[in-house]
Image (cartoon, rainbow, N blue to C red):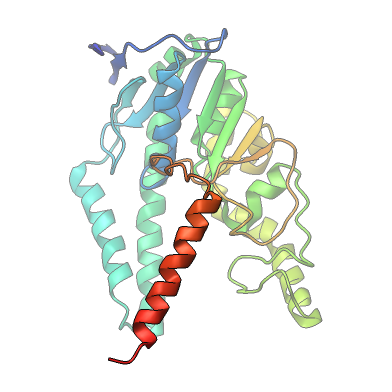
Length: 320
């Protein structure tokens, strides 16, 4: 049977909860020490699956989560570090409620839809920034993490908090993502992304574009660096305050060691990939039972099937 132990300790206002389950020894001779800095919402599903599997295999896994979140929480095979935030459950519920209303109200006018989406985006980004600031500028927590001797950080670069912590601690970053706005992930990884056949966001194009569509796609691609800087400008400021050096988010992400892409090229348009990009599409899907083995038909089985078909044909064609 599996035994689970619970240990709680406090450093400053940060709660450290140990929820580890004893498991079989890892098949690998090397056992690592992994720090996980996830993103809330649906992004947590795939991250949790990896954290639990790494812990089940014997690695030490520590997950940093806010004390109030949508889906994140303790689980088997990994330790949990809970840091305080400057909002409560009511604020989380208001954000999710507004987002749900936006998804359901399809009869709104175009102008009203724009206003609603803008308001929802503001609420979500405010939640993201407040969570990031609560973690990055928690000196006692960052000091504690620096003393744990982590080998790497597993994070979602959509919110570059984990990447900033990895740079601060001087350890490699492993990214798990579906994609980033304005192809910031591709540029940060140094991956070619030719606009001649890689369609940009919001264009609605495929990889088969006319000359006019390629011109439009190229113009959008030229605007992407500016748009990504506008989107992550507050994180650029956090990076300067947290790291003490003038770096932007793209430069921080460029230090990433591995990019785990939750995609499959069967469902994507063709595009180049770098050697450190690994496709892990379906990683958060449940493992189903294997299909039953099908026995090969013998000659006698085929003869029986043919005889049955002949009898069936005679039956339906014969007069009553």
